[in-house]
Image 1 (tube, rainbow, N blue to C red):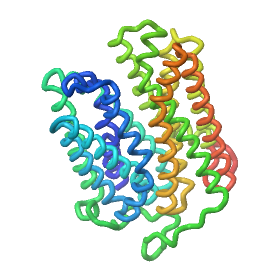
Image 2 (image 1 turned 30 degrees about the vertical axis):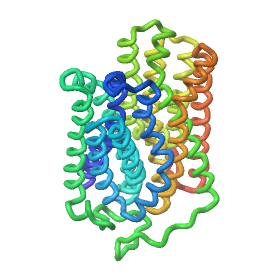
Image 3 (image 1 turned 90 degrees about the horizontal axis):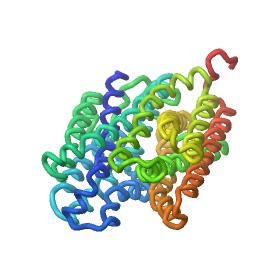
Image 4 (image 1 turned 180 degrees about the horizontal axis):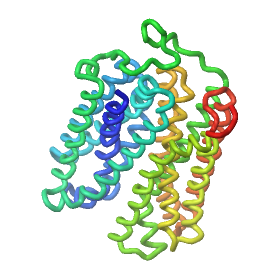
Length: 410
Protein backbone atom coordinates (compact mmCIF):
# COMPACT_ATOMS: atom_id res chain seq x y z
CA UNK A 1 0.00 0.00 0.00
CA UNK A 2 1.08 3.57 -0.71
CA UNK A 3 0.99 4.72 2.91
CA UNK A 4 3.28 1.86 4.01
CA UNK A 5 5.76 2.79 1.32
CA UNK A 6 5.63 6.43 2.49
CA UNK A 7 6.31 5.41 6.08
CA UNK A 8 9.24 3.29 4.93
CA UNK A 9 10.70 6.15 2.86
CA UNK A 10 10.17 8.68 5.66
CA UNK A 11 12.05 6.52 8.16
CA UNK A 12 14.73 5.82 5.56
CA UNK A 13 15.13 9.60 5.11
CA UNK A 14 16.24 9.84 8.75
CA UNK A 15 19.13 7.50 7.92
CA UNK A 16 20.22 9.66 4.97
CA UNK A 17 20.97 12.78 7.05
CA UNK A 18 21.05 12.18 10.79
CA UNK A 19 24.30 10.13 11.01
CA UNK A 20 26.53 12.92 9.68
CA UNK A 21 24.48 15.91 10.92
CA UNK A 22 24.93 14.55 14.48
CA UNK A 23 28.66 15.33 14.40
CA UNK A 24 28.39 19.14 14.21
CA UNK A 25 26.99 19.83 17.72
CA UNK A 26 29.78 17.84 19.41
CA UNK A 27 32.66 18.43 17.01
CA UNK A 28 34.60 20.23 19.76
CA UNK A 29 34.24 17.28 22.14
CA UNK A 30 35.46 14.85 19.49
CA UNK A 31 38.47 17.01 18.64
CA UNK A 32 39.44 17.45 22.29
CA UNK A 33 39.16 13.74 23.07
CA UNK A 34 41.09 12.57 20.00
CA UNK A 35 43.55 15.49 20.08
CA UNK A 36 42.55 16.67 16.60
CA UNK A 37 43.02 20.07 15.05
CA UNK A 38 40.11 21.95 13.49
CA UNK A 39 40.87 20.69 9.97
CA UNK A 40 40.69 17.06 11.04
CA UNK A 41 37.45 17.62 12.93
CA UNK A 42 36.05 19.22 9.78
CA UNK A 43 36.63 15.96 7.91
CA UNK A 44 33.88 14.29 9.94
CA UNK A 45 31.33 16.74 8.54
CA UNK A 46 32.91 17.28 5.12
CA UNK A 47 33.73 13.69 4.15
CA UNK A 48 30.12 12.52 3.69
CA UNK A 49 29.35 15.32 1.21
CA UNK A 50 32.64 14.59 -0.58
CA UNK A 51 31.68 10.91 -0.76
CA UNK A 52 28.32 11.86 -2.26
CA UNK A 53 30.07 13.92 -4.93
CA UNK A 54 32.78 11.39 -5.81
CA UNK A 55 30.85 8.14 -5.43
CA UNK A 56 27.48 9.07 -6.95
CA UNK A 57 28.31 7.60 -10.41
CA UNK A 58 29.34 4.32 -8.76
CA UNK A 59 26.25 4.47 -6.54
CA UNK A 60 24.04 4.77 -9.61
CA UNK A 61 25.72 1.70 -11.08
CA UNK A 62 25.19 -0.19 -7.81
CA UNK A 63 21.48 0.67 -7.80
CA UNK A 64 21.23 -0.60 -11.38
CA UNK A 65 22.89 -3.90 -10.46
CA UNK A 66 21.12 -4.49 -7.16
CA UNK A 67 17.72 -3.03 -7.91
CA UNK A 68 16.32 -0.23 -5.72
CA UNK A 69 14.85 -2.43 -2.98
CA UNK A 70 18.08 -4.26 -2.24
CA UNK A 71 20.01 -1.00 -2.65
CA UNK A 72 17.95 0.61 0.13
CA UNK A 73 18.37 -2.44 2.36
CA UNK A 74 22.12 -2.36 1.73
CA UNK A 75 22.23 1.34 2.56
CA UNK A 76 20.49 0.79 5.88
CA UNK A 77 22.86 -2.03 6.83
CA UNK A 78 25.96 -0.16 5.64
CA UNK A 79 25.10 3.06 7.46
CA UNK A 80 24.51 1.10 10.65
CA UNK A 81 27.94 -0.53 10.35
CA UNK A 82 29.51 2.87 9.65
CA UNK A 83 27.90 4.46 12.71
CA UNK A 84 29.21 1.66 14.95
CA UNK A 85 32.71 1.74 13.47
CA UNK A 86 32.91 5.55 13.81
CA UNK A 87 32.23 5.33 17.55
CA UNK A 88 34.36 2.28 18.27
CA UNK A 89 37.93 3.55 18.41
CA UNK A 90 40.46 6.24 17.62
CA UNK A 91 41.18 8.45 14.62
CA UNK A 92 41.30 5.66 12.05
CA UNK A 93 37.98 4.17 13.17
CA UNK A 94 36.27 7.57 13.18
CA UNK A 95 37.42 8.37 9.64
CA UNK A 96 36.73 4.90 8.23
CA UNK A 97 33.25 4.89 9.78
CA UNK A 98 32.54 8.33 8.33
CA UNK A 99 33.60 7.19 4.85
CA UNK A 100 31.37 4.11 5.13
CA UNK A 101 28.42 6.30 6.11
CA UNK A 102 29.00 8.64 3.18
CA UNK A 103 29.47 5.83 0.66
CA UNK A 104 26.31 3.94 1.60
CA UNK A 105 24.19 7.11 1.84
CA UNK A 106 25.29 7.91 -1.72
CA UNK A 107 23.64 4.65 -2.81
CA UNK A 108 20.46 5.45 -0.90
CA UNK A 109 20.24 8.93 -2.40
CA UNK A 110 19.99 7.39 -5.88
CA UNK A 111 17.68 4.52 -4.92
CA UNK A 112 14.86 6.67 -3.51
CA UNK A 113 13.81 8.46 -6.74
CA UNK A 114 13.95 5.12 -8.56
CA UNK A 115 11.52 3.61 -6.04
CA UNK A 116 9.23 6.64 -6.28
CA UNK A 117 9.24 6.49 -10.10
CA UNK A 118 8.48 2.76 -10.05
CA UNK A 119 5.96 2.39 -7.23
CA UNK A 120 4.15 5.70 -6.70
CA UNK A 121 1.17 6.73 -8.82
CA UNK A 122 1.86 9.91 -10.83
CA UNK A 123 -0.71 11.98 -8.90
CA UNK A 124 1.02 11.11 -5.61
CA UNK A 125 4.63 11.75 -6.59
CA UNK A 126 4.61 15.34 -5.30
CA UNK A 127 3.06 14.40 -1.94
CA UNK A 128 5.49 11.51 -1.48
CA UNK A 129 8.41 13.79 -2.37
CA UNK A 130 7.21 16.39 0.13
CA UNK A 131 6.96 13.87 2.95
CA UNK A 132 10.41 12.50 2.13
CA UNK A 133 11.99 15.98 2.05
CA UNK A 134 10.27 16.98 5.29
CA UNK A 135 11.67 13.85 6.93
CA UNK A 136 15.21 14.73 5.77
CA UNK A 137 14.99 18.07 7.56
CA UNK A 138 13.12 16.66 10.56
CA UNK A 139 15.86 14.08 11.08
CA UNK A 140 18.48 16.82 10.93
CA UNK A 141 16.57 18.87 13.53
CA UNK A 142 16.18 15.96 15.94
CA UNK A 143 19.81 14.89 15.83
CA UNK A 144 21.10 18.48 16.03
CA UNK A 145 18.99 19.12 19.13
CA UNK A 146 19.60 15.87 21.03
CA UNK A 147 23.18 14.83 20.26
CA UNK A 148 24.85 17.38 22.55
CA UNK A 149 22.68 16.48 25.59
CA UNK A 150 23.37 12.79 24.95
CA UNK A 151 27.10 13.52 24.82
CA UNK A 152 26.92 15.32 28.17
CA UNK A 153 25.33 12.24 29.72
CA UNK A 154 27.33 9.42 28.14
CA UNK A 155 30.14 10.87 26.02
CA UNK A 156 30.43 11.57 22.30
CA UNK A 157 30.90 7.94 21.25
CA UNK A 158 27.62 6.82 22.78
CA UNK A 159 25.89 9.95 21.53
CA UNK A 160 26.85 9.17 17.92
CA UNK A 161 26.19 5.44 18.25
CA UNK A 162 22.76 6.17 19.75
CA UNK A 163 21.45 7.10 16.31
CA UNK A 164 21.59 3.45 15.32
CA UNK A 165 18.05 3.52 16.68
CA UNK A 166 17.08 5.30 13.45
CA UNK A 167 18.80 2.58 11.44
CA UNK A 168 16.74 -0.08 13.21
CA UNK A 169 13.56 1.94 12.67
CA UNK A 170 14.33 2.30 8.97
CA UNK A 171 15.04 -1.42 8.60
CA UNK A 172 11.80 -2.46 10.27
CA UNK A 173 9.57 -0.04 8.37
CA UNK A 174 11.23 -0.80 5.04
CA UNK A 175 10.68 -4.55 5.47
CA UNK A 176 7.07 -3.90 6.48
CA UNK A 177 6.64 -1.75 3.35
CA UNK A 178 8.01 -4.17 0.75
CA UNK A 179 8.16 -7.52 2.52
CA UNK A 180 11.14 -9.49 3.79
CA UNK A 181 12.03 -11.33 0.59
CA UNK A 182 11.62 -8.34 -1.79
CA UNK A 183 13.78 -6.22 0.53
CA UNK A 184 16.71 -8.59 -0.05
CA UNK A 185 16.00 -9.62 -3.60
CA UNK A 186 18.24 -8.38 -6.37
CA UNK A 187 15.34 -7.49 -8.62
CA UNK A 188 12.17 -6.98 -6.60
CA UNK A 189 8.78 -7.38 -8.22
CA UNK A 190 6.73 -4.21 -8.47
CA UNK A 191 4.06 -4.15 -5.77
CA UNK A 192 2.25 -0.90 -6.60
CA UNK A 193 0.02 -0.13 -9.53
CA UNK A 194 1.88 -0.28 -12.85
CA UNK A 195 3.14 3.03 -14.17
CA UNK A 196 2.33 4.49 -17.57
CA UNK A 197 5.36 2.82 -19.17
CA UNK A 198 4.82 -0.63 -17.72
CA UNK A 199 4.00 -3.56 -20.00
CA UNK A 200 0.32 -4.40 -19.49
CA UNK A 201 0.67 -8.15 -19.17
CA UNK A 202 3.96 -8.74 -17.41
CA UNK A 203 4.01 -5.52 -15.34
CA UNK A 204 7.68 -5.29 -16.21
CA UNK A 205 9.57 -2.24 -17.42
CA UNK A 206 9.83 -1.93 -21.19
CA UNK A 207 13.00 -1.34 -23.13
CA UNK A 208 14.69 1.83 -21.80
CA UNK A 209 13.07 4.91 -23.27
CA UNK A 210 15.04 7.13 -25.60
CA UNK A 211 16.25 10.48 -24.34
CA UNK A 212 15.31 13.34 -26.60
CA UNK A 213 17.17 16.62 -26.80
CA UNK A 214 14.72 18.17 -24.35
CA UNK A 215 15.60 15.49 -21.74
CA UNK A 216 19.30 16.30 -21.95
CA UNK A 217 18.63 20.03 -21.68
CA UNK A 218 16.42 19.40 -18.67
CA UNK A 219 19.17 17.30 -17.09
CA UNK A 220 21.66 20.16 -17.45
CA UNK A 221 19.35 22.79 -15.98
CA UNK A 222 18.27 20.48 -13.15
CA UNK A 223 21.90 19.76 -12.30
CA UNK A 224 22.61 23.51 -12.11
CA UNK A 225 19.51 24.00 -9.93
CA UNK A 226 20.62 21.28 -7.51
CA UNK A 227 24.13 22.74 -7.46
CA UNK A 228 22.92 26.24 -6.62
CA UNK A 229 20.55 25.03 -3.92
CA UNK A 230 23.10 22.66 -2.37
CA UNK A 231 25.77 25.38 -2.30
CA UNK A 232 23.50 27.82 -0.44
CA UNK A 233 22.13 25.21 1.96
CA UNK A 234 25.40 23.58 2.96
CA UNK A 235 27.24 26.90 3.04
CA UNK A 236 24.65 28.55 5.29
CA UNK A 237 24.43 25.46 7.49
CA UNK A 238 28.18 25.64 8.08
CA UNK A 239 28.56 29.40 8.52
CA UNK A 240 25.23 30.86 9.68
CA UNK A 241 26.18 30.67 13.41
CA UNK A 242 29.36 32.65 12.68
CA UNK A 243 27.41 35.21 10.62
CA UNK A 244 24.92 35.70 13.44
CA UNK A 245 27.68 36.08 16.03
CA UNK A 246 29.54 38.74 14.08
CA UNK A 247 26.75 40.59 12.28
CA UNK A 248 24.01 40.42 14.92
CA UNK A 249 26.12 40.11 18.08
CA UNK A 250 24.72 36.80 19.32
CA UNK A 251 26.49 34.57 21.80
CA UNK A 252 27.89 31.28 20.45
CA UNK A 253 25.14 29.29 22.16
CA UNK A 254 22.42 31.63 20.95
CA UNK A 255 23.76 31.67 17.39
CA UNK A 256 23.90 27.88 17.27
CA UNK A 257 20.32 27.61 18.44
CA UNK A 258 19.12 30.37 16.10
CA UNK A 259 20.68 28.66 13.11
CA UNK A 260 18.14 25.89 13.60
CA UNK A 261 15.49 28.17 12.09
CA UNK A 262 16.86 27.27 8.67
CA UNK A 263 16.18 23.58 9.33
CA UNK A 264 12.84 24.03 11.09
CA UNK A 265 11.30 26.19 8.37
CA UNK A 266 12.18 23.60 5.72
CA UNK A 267 9.66 21.11 7.13
CA UNK A 268 6.49 23.15 6.41
CA UNK A 269 8.04 24.22 3.11
CA UNK A 270 8.35 20.60 2.01
CA UNK A 271 4.79 19.79 3.07
CA UNK A 272 3.23 22.88 1.46
CA UNK A 273 5.08 22.51 -1.86
CA UNK A 274 2.72 19.83 -3.30
CA UNK A 275 -0.27 22.06 -2.58
CA UNK A 276 1.45 25.01 -4.25
CA UNK A 277 2.26 22.86 -7.26
CA UNK A 278 -1.36 21.83 -7.66
CA UNK A 279 -2.67 25.39 -7.26
CA UNK A 280 -0.05 27.25 -9.30
CA UNK A 281 1.35 24.54 -11.54
CA UNK A 282 4.95 23.40 -11.40
CA UNK A 283 6.22 26.56 -13.10
CA UNK A 284 4.38 28.97 -10.79
CA UNK A 285 5.22 27.06 -7.61
CA UNK A 286 8.92 26.83 -8.37
CA UNK A 287 9.03 30.48 -9.45
CA UNK A 288 7.50 31.56 -6.12
CA UNK A 289 9.70 29.33 -3.96
CA UNK A 290 12.93 30.14 -5.75
CA UNK A 291 12.18 33.87 -5.49
CA UNK A 292 11.99 33.40 -1.72
CA UNK A 293 15.28 31.50 -1.84
CA UNK A 294 16.98 34.53 -3.41
CA UNK A 295 15.34 36.97 -0.99
CA UNK A 296 16.81 35.11 2.02
CA UNK A 297 20.52 35.91 1.56
CA UNK A 298 19.66 39.34 0.10
CA UNK A 299 17.81 40.20 3.31
CA UNK A 300 20.67 38.86 5.43
CA UNK A 301 23.04 41.16 3.55
CA UNK A 302 21.00 44.37 3.75
CA UNK A 303 19.15 43.92 7.08
CA UNK A 304 20.89 41.29 9.18
CA UNK A 305 18.97 42.33 12.31
CA UNK A 306 15.88 40.71 10.76
CA UNK A 307 17.74 37.41 10.32
CA UNK A 308 14.80 35.33 11.63
CA UNK A 309 12.57 36.51 8.76
CA UNK A 310 15.20 35.90 6.09
CA UNK A 311 16.25 32.47 7.36
CA UNK A 312 12.62 31.42 7.75
CA UNK A 313 12.04 32.34 4.11
CA UNK A 314 15.23 30.55 3.02
CA UNK A 315 14.39 27.44 4.99
CA UNK A 316 10.81 27.34 3.74
CA UNK A 317 12.00 27.79 0.15
CA UNK A 318 14.75 25.22 0.56
CA UNK A 319 12.34 22.54 1.76
CA UNK A 320 9.73 23.34 -0.86
CA UNK A 321 12.22 23.83 -3.67
CA UNK A 322 13.99 20.55 -2.99
CA UNK A 323 10.63 18.76 -2.97
CA UNK A 324 9.72 20.11 -6.40
CA UNK A 325 13.18 19.48 -7.85
CA UNK A 326 12.96 15.90 -6.57
CA UNK A 327 9.53 15.63 -8.20
CA UNK A 328 10.96 16.99 -11.45
CA UNK A 329 13.64 14.28 -11.52
CA UNK A 330 10.96 11.62 -11.20
CA UNK A 331 8.43 13.17 -13.57
CA UNK A 332 10.71 13.91 -16.54
CA UNK A 333 12.09 10.35 -16.51
CA UNK A 334 10.20 7.77 -18.57
CA UNK A 335 11.53 4.65 -16.83
CA UNK A 336 13.69 3.45 -13.94
CA UNK A 337 16.91 3.66 -15.94
CA UNK A 338 16.32 7.28 -16.85
CA UNK A 339 15.49 8.34 -13.31
CA UNK A 340 18.60 6.57 -12.00
CA UNK A 341 20.83 8.36 -14.53
CA UNK A 342 19.17 11.73 -13.96
CA UNK A 343 19.40 11.37 -10.18
CA UNK A 344 23.09 10.54 -10.47
CA UNK A 345 23.80 13.56 -12.69
CA UNK A 346 21.87 16.08 -10.62
CA UNK A 347 23.00 14.81 -7.23
CA UNK A 348 26.61 14.29 -8.29
CA UNK A 349 26.96 17.89 -9.48
CA UNK A 350 24.88 19.16 -6.57
CA UNK A 351 27.09 17.51 -3.97
CA UNK A 352 30.26 18.78 -5.65
CA UNK A 353 28.86 22.26 -4.98
CA UNK A 354 27.82 21.23 -1.47
CA UNK A 355 31.26 19.88 -0.61
CA UNK A 356 32.99 23.03 -1.87
CA UNK A 357 30.66 25.57 -0.24
CA UNK A 358 31.98 25.61 3.37
CA UNK A 359 35.61 25.90 2.28
CA UNK A 360 34.95 28.54 -0.38
CA UNK A 361 32.82 30.67 1.90
CA UNK A 362 35.40 30.35 4.67
CA UNK A 363 38.19 31.37 2.32
CA UNK A 364 36.24 34.43 1.15
CA UNK A 365 35.59 35.50 4.72
CA UNK A 366 39.23 35.02 5.70
CA UNK A 367 40.41 37.03 2.69
CA UNK A 368 37.95 39.91 2.97
CA UNK A 369 37.53 40.00 6.74
CA UNK A 370 33.79 40.59 6.33
CA UNK A 371 30.65 38.70 5.36
CA UNK A 372 29.67 40.90 2.42
CA UNK A 373 31.51 38.89 -0.24
CA UNK A 374 30.31 35.48 1.04
CA UNK A 375 26.70 36.71 1.14
CA UNK A 376 27.00 38.04 -2.42
CA UNK A 377 28.20 34.58 -3.49
CA UNK A 378 25.20 33.02 -1.72
CA UNK A 379 22.92 35.39 -3.64
CA UNK A 380 24.57 34.43 -6.92
CA UNK A 381 24.17 30.71 -6.20
CA UNK A 382 20.51 31.22 -5.27
CA UNK A 383 19.92 33.09 -8.56
CA UNK A 384 21.55 30.23 -10.50
CA UNK A 385 19.24 27.81 -8.69
CA UNK A 386 16.14 29.88 -9.41
CA UNK A 387 16.84 30.48 -13.10
CA UNK A 388 17.87 26.87 -13.75
CA UNK A 389 14.85 25.42 -11.92
CA UNK A 390 12.40 27.57 -13.85
CA UNK A 391 14.12 26.72 -17.15
CA UNK A 392 13.86 23.01 -16.30
CA UNK A 393 10.10 23.31 -15.93
CA UNK A 394 9.78 25.38 -19.09
CA UNK A 395 11.71 22.83 -21.16
CA UNK A 396 9.94 19.78 -19.74
CA UNK A 397 6.53 21.46 -19.78
CA UNK A 398 6.76 21.99 -23.53
CA UNK A 399 6.76 18.21 -23.91
CA UNK A 400 3.71 17.51 -21.78
CA UNK A 401 5.46 16.27 -18.68
CA UNK A 402 3.21 18.24 -16.29
CA UNK A 403 -0.52 18.77 -15.89
CA UNK A 404 -1.82 22.35 -15.94
CA UNK A 405 -2.38 24.27 -12.72
CA UNK A 406 -5.81 23.85 -11.15
CA UNK A 407 -8.30 26.11 -12.82
CA UNK A 408 -6.17 26.64 -15.92
CA UNK A 409 -7.02 25.11 -19.31
CA UNK A 410 -4.93 22.25 -20.59
